[in-house]
Length: 207
Image 1 (cartoon, helix red, strand yellow):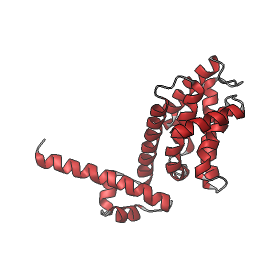
Image 2: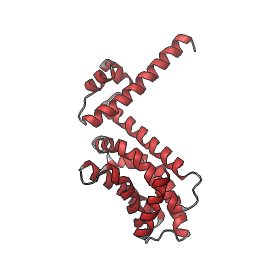
Image 3: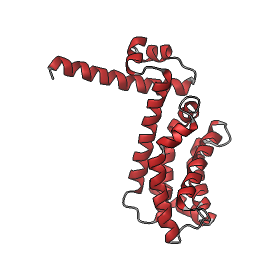
């Protein structure tokens, strides 16, 4: 590869990253932002944006992919080295919420284009990891639920979606939502509320 080709590739990659960063900010500010608006905000011509993303839907889909990757990374890092299933769930949800709070308006927007099913499919690996963790907790008696672990993982996922919508609708502040969601998820898995609250308070102070 020649130096000129390498330079062009690097510039194209930089443009793509800039467009994605600007698009996220613009869409969170104005969910109806057009490709023209995004191009102007990114300081490029519209043709450059369409060169990377053939449609507004493709751009939003790419942003959702990035959000899901960030969620998966946060989940894995939060659980690393944690042996207690309840603490692992607590650390995971708290870490995921920090990412989810940043992207919650994007998820609401994406449901218009990517669809809920599309988002759910993207979350499948993260849900599978959570199901394995819940299965271990159920076997060890840390959790107690009439639902099998894979179904309980779906419940936890929907609880987080519901909390993000509650924040979007002004029913809950983003600051209190993370801890509240974590306690709710632990109690949904069968932990006593007092135990879950104490665990979340301890984990939160350690972070």
